[in-house]
Image: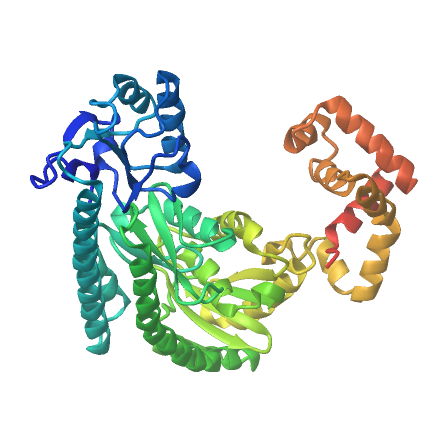
Amino acid sequence: MRVADLPAMPELRLALLADGGPGGLDREVRWVYTTDLLEPAAFLSGGELVLTSEGWYRTEADCETFAASLAQGGAAALVAGDILLGEVPPALVAACSRHRIPVLAAPADISYSTLSRTVIDRINHERGRELADVLGRHRRLVTALVEGADLGGLVAMLATELDTPCWALSPAGRLLAGPAHALPAVTRTRLAAHALHAERLPATIDGRTLLPIGRRSAGGGLLVVHGTPDDTTTAEQTAELLALGGARRDERRRTEQQFHAQLVELLDQQAPAAAVTARLRTTGLATDRPLLVLTALTRGALRSWDLAADLAESALDEDPDIRTVIAGSESGLTILASLGTHLDDTHLARLLRDRLTQFEPAADGGRIAFGLSASPDPAGLSRALEESRHAARLAALRPHCLALVTAGELDSHLLLLAGVPAEIRGSYRHSLLGPLHAYDTEHGTDLVHTLTVFLEANGAWRTAATELHIHVSTLHYRIGRIEQLTGRDLSTARDRVDLYLACTISDH
């Protein structure tokens, strides 16, 4: 019940003396607490209707102390009687108004036990009605699930039950169900990235409540509810039901992946173009448009093909004309796509890198390395697949946990590094950057990152300083320290190249 309901209960005959300011009368009353303590905050848990006969009153200054304690304890409202003082002290009403506590006066002929019992009975009655509503809602959702409702049907039903927009998102923010126009793609991506590295869920961001669908893992999803549900527990239970609805979709997807793996086997065998074209058509991919190939390699905490595929598809979804197939093999996850009319491989690479940057904080030590290539027709698809795998292996050398390399980068120095055994690459990096790592560890500095940014900026002092959010003079000091520790001269091309190669090699 709300504070506004109290003066409307004729059996209580409560008179409103102060409304507690904006929103004061809309506060929820969760329980009743009777006290004559001057400072009752320690005994309040929030939402109580506090009853007092002013036994604590000695001077007007006590009113301020009492009101401040009510506010500290989160009291919903105060009911004051005139048994001891003959009236509710004006100083108490004024103090409660300053602390935004609604005040009601109780008549002298009604006992606080009667008042307390009446209010508690009303609270319990309303809770019972809410519980019945919750159980009815839950029963209807379960019935719909048993009768074959999919994820979209369950989300639409939940939105109707809660009378507020709801959405189901994939871990990377792809829209699985719900009104797309009411939740733009950029918002979906931001919500999903926030959820993946949030300390706990449910969480609220941008006026929306985020709940995990099923287990909170890379293969799970996200239920987004506009506003804050009255009963978060019920919303969490509903999210579990949505996981069952999504399980059907995931099972279909796994079946499709097994079929699509046969296409990848054909490409590995360098089958004739006619056979590849025929198989492409059976998967629904257009053969008269350019074709994209993405290879994903996963490791560690992010060893989930589901998340890797989801990140790629979230970028591909920018073009509604694109069709995709997904297959898994010993060589990694392979995503094939026939290009639509609004997205080429360059644009896709930019979109995917943007998403990887947003989700980097959620990597938690895991790694996903993407390789991207393209072919103008089915005849060149085998070569494009091999290029994408090479590019993915190069991406795995990058220092970032989530990285992408395109086929166009295969002619760079990274191609040479990829042919060097991992132990030799690691030894090379340690010999050049080891002193910097040791110094950073001992002094809490960030010299390795400073060096990387400086070299990526081609030695442009102001550009690097801006990227690092430091003054140019500070950057000069750091570079001087780096040269001192490494014994290298960053004004020479040879030493810059050596250190740049070392920075390029991942330390994982």
